[in-house]
Length: 149
Length: 464
Picture 1 (cartoon, each protein chain N blue to C red):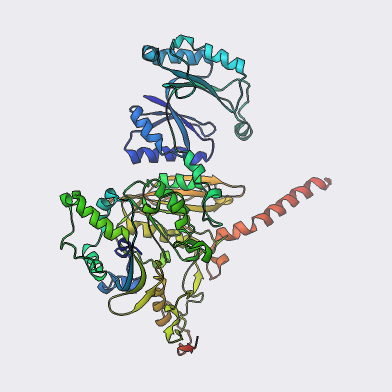
Picture 2: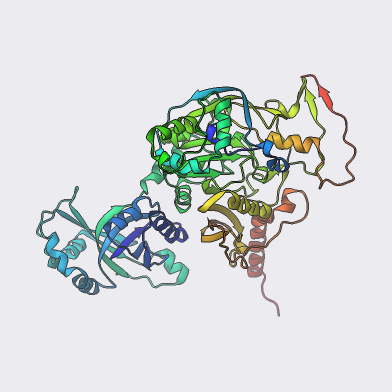
């Protein structure tokens, strides 16, 4: 998962999306890989205005990057090649290969090698709380089953 | 100035739409003066050669663009038109190395006849050397005959003489070669539902994929739309409810996910963002305008199921713990899914596009239709989206359409009174929810019955 993607994803549960805790998702025990890619200044200039800067600073910090400037580069600052190159490295070239993601400080979920299983967040919801639309005749939830694998 | 665009004689309804999309992309004023679905020749008005080159450079369905020097139904008319349009410019071409060719669409000319045609143009007074390889200027006589297809479909009379003749000066060619390099037969990783290279590229063109843009496919599968959009320079990401589609089997993911092989094959690795598992109805993407384009071919529910997360009866499943860990946090957990409505899904795609597209961003969505709907086809609409074009790819007894929408800026709305207001059937099974699936699956039965009925009619002698 690239850092840029992390800036566009939040918890998949509809009810959680409105909560400030659902974004950004936090990385733990992240294993990073740097992949060299063609420098595309045009793309960075286009995409930076759409980035949530505060969240990007949080993510960069969690991944051990030197801290980003407090305010988002705009206008002339986006003409500076070094700024663009640094952002290119952080947003596009940095990949989280292995690690855990958590929402706020509540649930933690594992992420597979470069794949995201956000579906799981949704599942936590449907598995644990009967949805409002569920028919009322639902039998009482059986207690948790425990298997030894 | 007037130009002659030589189109490919296929995917007819997509051809004008692609040209118009490319004109929008490059900010070119394009006026289509003459277009006919039965012929490859289309006359357009453009500012100059530079605009013509830009317009055609990315086109998949246009082969060449020529400056129009004349046209007519007969050679007399053509010669008169050439005199009228270009007499003052002949001197400029007097000493260039040139080539002159005769190109017949759906017709043939003998070498002797071709020579005769060449000689009829001596009045142009081209005195330069004839050079067939790398000439400075290429002139082309394009003859257009009535095809069997047209004669059969709309009863146009066939003739041994061309219906229309054009003379043009060649300017530039399109990008049709890419169709061959992207051919699915040569692609490393594909699936049963991969969209063919030509239409994927046309879709990407019509969605205005270009360098610096972010494109997303919510039903990514093996990623045929992503490589097409990335070919035109967009950075792409995709998701699918079933990760096996893009991840591939064990032996296919030597270096990351299997879909990456295609990006490597076409040298597009720098254009790939991410692929993740998700469900459009419960998308993890933030509700903010950050996408320049969404291209998708949502599942039709025929070859692949139309499913979203949830349980069929809507009841929650009790949590299961395996080895001290909640089962849904373990590797390899497969979430429960339920069949989903066909119409509902299309509406969800439109809603999602409205939430995530930047102003003027485009949504390109494919949708199948059973033949009985084909006559009057209501397009799904949304007040914040403008329908830019609708193109049809017909099959024997069903067809699919590509719909292109533009995200309107805040404050503007489109008229949706003619939109599709169909709802899904009631029930929980795939057939209950998807009328298209039912029609598709029963089409052969119906056809057999019809054939039987007509046969019986013919066989039984008439009694009074």
